[in-house]
Length: 152
Image 1: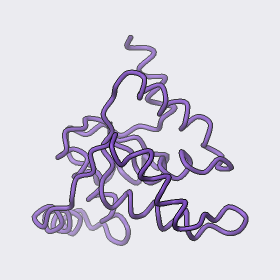
Image 2 (image 1 turned 30 degrees about the vertical axis):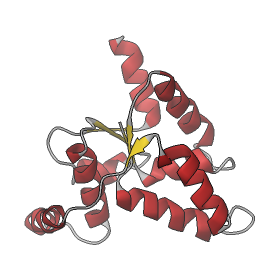
Image 3 (image 1 turned 60 degrees about the vertical axis):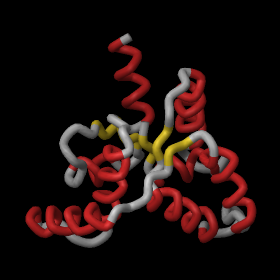
């Protein structure tokens, strides 16, 4: 199960609008022994966002590092970004005439799939649907919970 930055931030920021639903779904999945995949870029981006949020929501870098380590240091697969993945993502985005920060979403999606996850949870599904590789399902935590309830 992959987690995008847009899930990591509300998971760790109690005051975030999506905190409760993200935390609830994350805890439910953990109880089911789901192995989480957090792409290297998503982890770094979460650190950047949490340490630059406007006061009073901004977290100290030491706190953010601790929270990320406690929650994902031992319990998540953090795949590195391979050089060939970067170049193939760029090539594909150029072919699709997609630019800007979509490159980061493409690399997060590809890293997640390459690490063996079939689903990437994100609160920005439209951003990922246009760049995700075949075989990777994109869903919000809320959609995933609802979908899983219908299937099981």
